[in-house]
Length: 481
Picture 1 (cartoon, one colour):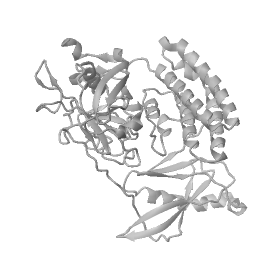
Picture 2: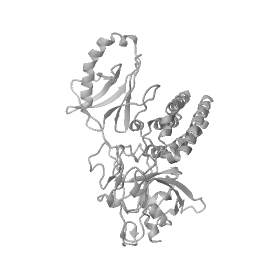
Picture 3: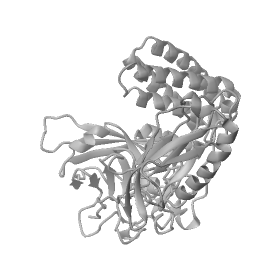
Picture 4: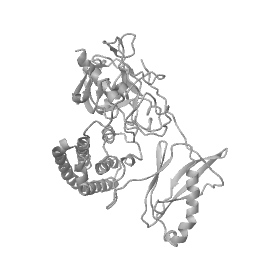
C-alpha cells in the first residue's frame, strides 16, 4: 500500500539583531503615515548573532484613525492593530512623526531579514466608502478549518462584495465560541457589515451571476437580504443557538450565489491529460461504511464534495472509479489516528488496473495554488521552489480528501485515497509536509467526526454520486459498459 507521510515540519523564525535591548520598541506606521503602531521586542535570546524574538502588543492606544497590519508566519499570526494611548503620546505629532520615521526604517530593515515566511499585509475591513478587498486577504489570519468554507473560498470567482459578505458570516461562527456578551456584540457587527455590503454592492453581485442563472441568482440575493434582516433580530434577541442556525443557512445561500457566478470551466487541462476522465465542476458523493466489529450499529453515511474546479483530473479519476463500483466492498486499510486510507485492490497491483490496457492507470500530481489560473502538474510545489504558496484546497480540515502515491514518484497516484483526521493545529497551512505534495480534491462535509471511529477492516458498502455526474467528461466506465 502506498504510504502517506505523517511527520510535520516545524519551523522557527529568526532575524538579525544588533544592540537591541530586551525592552526595545519598534515603531510601525500605516501606509498613509497618519498614525504609528508600537510593538515591543522582548525575551531576546542571542545565539551567534541572531536572536529569537517573542513579540507582544502594547496595550496603550492612540486617538487617531489608521490602517492595520498583520505579521504572519508559521502557525500563529501576530496582529498589530491601531490603538489608543495617553494624551502625551499624541502631542507634537509633526515632530514625532519625523523622529519616529528613522525608527520605522530600522524596523523595516530588521523585518526584511526574517529568514522564512514572514510578510506584512493589510487587514481587510470594509467601511463606508471603502473599496472591497482582494479575496486573498479574506483568508489571512488563523487557518480556515471548516470544509464548507474552504470549498466556498476555492470557487473560481472574483466578486469581492460576495466574498466580503461570506467572510463576515464566517466570522460569526468563530465569534460564537467566545463566552459572554462580547460574542453577541461581534456577531451584530458582522451582520451589520454584511448587510451594508449587500445593499451597497447589490448590482455588482447580480452582474457577476452567469446569464443563464440570473433569475435564480436574483431570488437568492433577495433571500439573503431578508435573511440578514432576520439575523439582526435574532442577534438582538441574544439567542446563540438560533444565531448559529441562521448563520449556516445564510452561508448556504451565499455559497449558491457564488456557484451561480461560475459559468464556464475556468481553464484548459493540459493536452497530455485532456483525454482522461475529468470532473469539470463539482460532484457530491455519499459513502456508506459498515462498522465490521459492531454488526448491530447503523451504517455511517459520509457526504463528500469533490472539487473539479481545482483538481479536474484527480476528481474525474475518482468519480470514474466510483461509477465502476471499484470501491464497493473494499475494506478500510489504514486507520492510525493520522489518516484513514483505502483503495489498494487485492492482488499485486497497487492501483486500478485498466481492463483496456491491462496496466495500472495512474494520474499526475495535481496541485492548485492560490492565485494560479490552473493547477500545477507533475511536480510538488517544493520541487518548483514555491515554498510560500498557499493552496486553494489546503490540508486544513479534518476530512480533507487526497490521493496517496509513491513518495518518490510524483505521478504514481491511481486509486488509493486518504482522509486527513488531524486538523490544522497539527497540519497548519503552509507549515506542513502535506500541502503542495499530495493532490487534494475534496472534503468530507457531513459526518466527518465519524472518520476517527473507522478501523482497519471496516467495509465501504458503497460509493454513489448523488449530484454532479454531468460534470464528468471522458468517462472510461461507459466505454467498458
